[in-house]
Length: 418
Ligand code: UD1
Image (cartoon, rainbow, N blue to C red; front, side, top):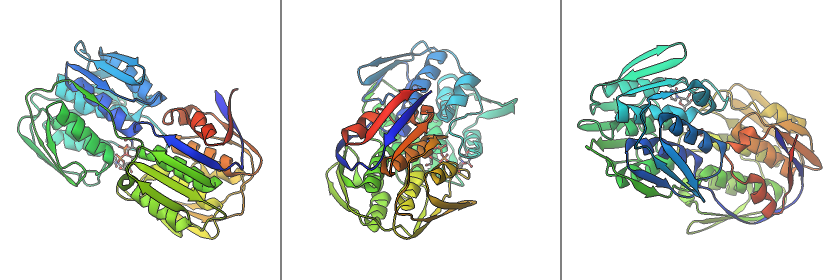
């Protein structure tokens, strides 16, 4: 298992070219088995979640090749509707395969999905929506077996705008008989990307990015070449890292409207933000002010995937902040690690009370989940002295070339095999 050794206290200056969004690439991989024609996804980040998804497709009988930065998927020989528990436990996004497998084979057997240990993450919304489309569902021994004759369009209302459930519904309804109207859909930019990808394959989907998505079932879908949207969470992580360390950094490739809430919060901290086309520039000088309150919400609210990084930022600001986590109940698991660095954070249920200290100090900490792990790296970059961040496997799930990109900005960070 690898670790980072970080000498904190360096300013971060320069430009970061963003990777394609992990949360877009994964459902696009799932969508690629909707057709037996070739699908090319451009600029795919080299992260373990993507490799795991590729392995899932291979187990189904598809061919997946990585050529330079692109992934070429040919699922003409795909024949299996089963996903082994070893893979679904690695990657929660395998749940999107339900919709795709049902469309392609009329059957799907998957083990209950895994992924980050950040809360219960049930899939009841996925399953009740699939039932509305005519799917029979049986659950046994940690497996879900879904079967359908012909999928039929339906009116579906989501009680909560679940990202995964919205994507699954798109994937299951895209070739269903008739029209599906989904109310209460999630509005994340990655859902818009999936809609556009499906439409480029010949689907008829509209409304993504609003809370009503309409899907007219089509008879067949063709191949496509697609470049996904850039990763707004990676963008946010680098912007926050610069805010914490001080410096002038630019992230390239993300639209400001996709990170609007974060930019508002960073301005509140006292950072200068400049936006020009798809470039966002941050300037951070001196000690920042805390955000009195940050509450995670579905898009366009403050993303839960940046909650840990925002807590780290507030840990060294002047003043106190209340961070409210509304999406995943155990998403403060990184806090005890952050406390080892001298942070003054008290967690009570869904709330974290953060009293800013002048400086964090170096410590040995363990990354227990993807975003919490990235946040600990950010904390170490801003801390006085040397830190070790142990167990990089979670960070490798979502950040390609994290060390290289940070080093390019001036960070003192090494990766060592332990
Ligand atoms: C996606 C993202 C993840 C992000 C999350 C919220 C991907 C691959 N992952 O995860 O990075 O943190 O959105 O923005 O895109 N819920 C239920 N029942 C369900 C489904 C969800 O109760 O059937 C609840 C969850 O427990 C959670 C909330 O809804 O509290 C949000 O989950 P959801 O939007 O589905 O997140 P994911 O799609 O898993």
